[in-house]
Length: 196
Image (tube, rainbow, N blue to C red):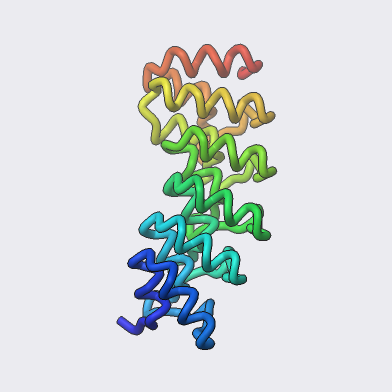
């Protein structure tokens, strides 16, 4: 796979090498064989210091690879909270979408409470619908286990104004999905928010 010394330094989390390579004129947003920039490589491995060094030097937090992942989107989807916050502080595109047509909030809603909180506070649209016909709320219910973590995510989304009646592409509502899965606590949250 085509790669550069800066990609290797990012993968290793070697901040000194990153600084040295950039001072020697390395292209900060160079692409490897997958289309990933050094910042995305650092984000993949949750190399916070390396990502911070690259972002501080001007790396593009929205640069997408060949499968439409960017450092911002990937950090959100994987719950790499520190890197996510760095990208949000450096012009992350809140409307940016992944290959499934979803914002960072939708995959985050599958498992990461603090990431969901952070993305909501940043202003990501809570009712964005992806290519599967799912919102973040539907993702949390359909791919969740109904436990404490997913209850918290549903509560955060509801408090942020998520449309509790916005059905999936087949017309199935969040409430119906919760009932079908036996997620009683989530069902209560949805009913309390006025789900019909």
